[in-house]
Length: 284
Image (cartoon, rainbow, N blue to C red; front, side, top):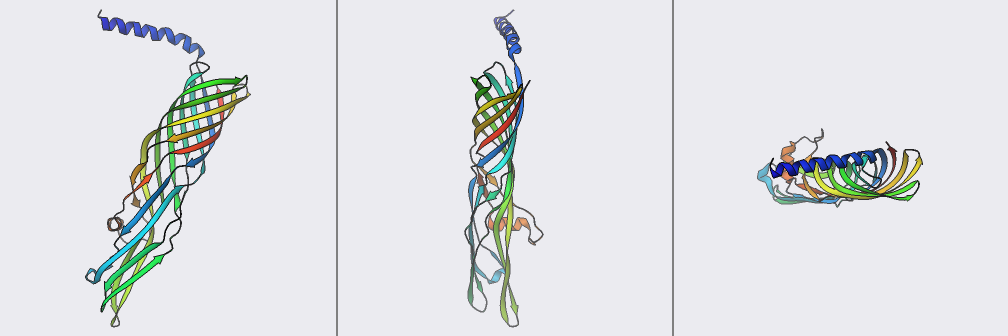
């Protein structure tokens, strides 16, 4: 038998020897809870492009500009968890959180200007008051935590836990502006027409990684039934996500044409959040 095999055998025997005493003390807990979630989402999208004119030979120049703000609202959520305790004080925790925050944000005016050729060069300009941002996004977080628990009294304990987290997000909101112009010769004169769309954008499901850290104080209300209050901080790097316009029956132009014209870009989202929650745990 080689030295490597001898060492492997000794390691296996050590694990098997330790598993017996650990298994005797091992127990697990299942729980679920309700949370109040404060989002860190606070992004700004700057929409700046040149509106088109039909016919193009009458076009001289144009501009459109606006700033759209996207902030996450405070919301309610839910969570579920499974905790495996190796001893009275040390364990592992699998934690899942879900919430669906709304979107808010005050936006600047939408400013549009067009220079075109009628009988002579003319200018048209307008500043539209733009509605506040609206919409929502969903966020689901999965975490694997190391947990340490300290007994404060016979029926009360304090736990701290933390570890890596996986964040999964998707959402939609508005509004982004798009303006187009038409110039027609009517009754010996030129008539300028057109329209402005207030469009909803969306970003596809996104996954990013980070960490979480939290503390819980728990009270044993009944035998094997625990009531708990916890606070937890989730942190993940900001991520640039590609935006797409949501199809709508009022939009008569191809979406690909609109996205190319305005140069629809990305929105920097922040998956991080802070939550406080109430939970019920069952000990097995």
